[in-house]
Length: 433
Ligand SMILES: *Cc1c(COP(=O)(O)O)cnc(C)c1O
Image (cartoon, rainbow, N blue to C red; front, side, top):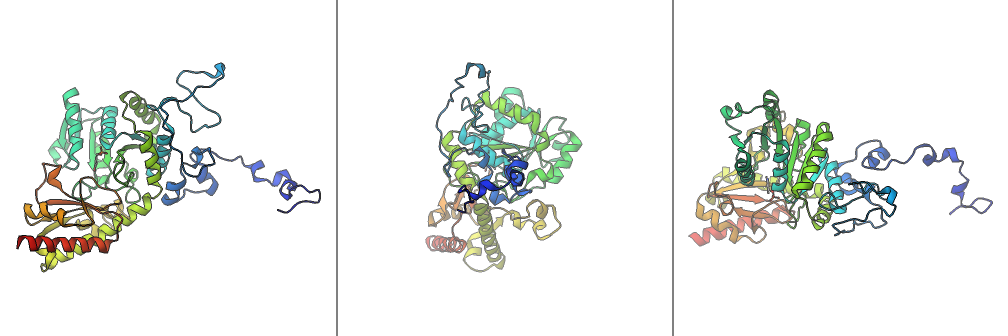
């Protein structure tokens, strides 16, 4: 290091008014990165750094704090009810982990940044959906097929307060909605991976004075941003792509930024009493997972697209192993609007159509038997992990066609996944010959 004549480090000789620190006070807090760069950073960078402002330790990797409770100040004059603010850790102050805890708070900081609206985490996707319903407290909800578990929550609420479930694709049902009710859109849809038009439902919700909520589990960032279409609350099963490794349950609610004021406080107060919070290990795993969100989801969606393209050209070709066993496919990329650059679908999903699609086999027997012939695809429910999964959907959803297989593409090489399917179709053919 250069030194001045006096022997002091050269840096000390710089006149005070040239020091940026003397003129621009350092910004700390959620906006510190945007302030330093004068712009919002990319999703990839925010996934790795959005929680930097919380980190007050030299450790690069986040610690796992298992504590459920946090010491109060030793200064009796500082003691205030439900306030345990620590000036040494202004963004990392906690009291009791049913309210907040270090690992989940850090996860929420990153989710807030990547989702584009303040986010809270819950014990599971369904816990998040339940919390949203309790908070908005509609008399009616219009909802489609999709993930059947949400219908279970609605049944529980019907038992408690008579909540009425209406069919979202039925115009007569939609017309029965009143002010304060909910239109809940799942897009893309479970299990087919087909997308629904959020702008259309925003207009409907505005006409009727309803809230528009979306289950965006199947297309996390960077695939779609529901807030661009005026959605009031974005819900995710964090168990899927945010967790991404089939090893944690979680749910997420993010609130449209202009609603944030009252709504976030209300949701947080209700979470404190309902108690549906995540554990600290899950918060830690979630942070670890979000670091690679963009890498994983981009890769998974691209690979799914290649496989859908390959399978559908085989099915349409009408010859060969695939077309002998596969009846049809479904995925957002196969919707007619996907081919039209100016369509709502291309606007809503500009970066890919998602890593989940469905295969209808020619018979129930073929659907039931294909998973056991595969080496890379594991036969299991759920989706969103680094491992490719395939599920004979009848195993967990009795409402679906028994010929249907749901496929969730992981991060393996797509050619290997293609070869695995091909040898599976061959093994099926040999077995049934
Ligand atoms: C898995 C899933 C849920 C439920 O999430 P859990 O974390 O299992 O409670 C809700 N919606 C969709 C679309 C899902 O795929």
